[in-house]
Length: 188
Image (cartoon, rainbow, N blue to C red; front, side, top):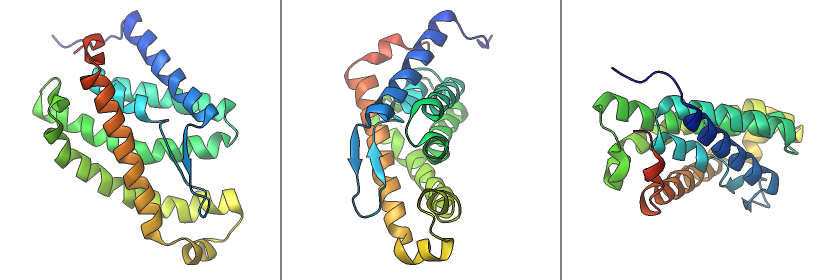
């Protein structure tokens, strides 16, 4: 029988991963582009870690908790949290769906198994995040109209930053879970 209930241990780990995510947002560990203001950071690393350690459900919980905490305490509040969540969701969803579909625990222990789902996730991320930047985030954050934003910030810059961000999230999460043996805390 499949385990449906979250244990106290699972919830504690989820809370710790979400808190770590929020702390990295508050401290803002990463690099900010001086030209475009976009960040490459490690906020969503724990969201992907929760997928590797547990499952898609736990990744959803950790990412929602992390985004909620960021919304309440980070300087860029709801806009940054919503963009981070919407940008990262296709990645952990695609990775999670592949492991569910294949019915394999620790499927991603071999990094080569990341290639296909990560590529699909990157395509989905770019398809979601490019229009969201032009029609939602940039107009709210900078006051620019969508037309001006499209003319000032090329779509490939947004795509490049999101590709780099995804690689940082997944590679760091993979290293922490599998190379640093955090997988021993997994409930899989």
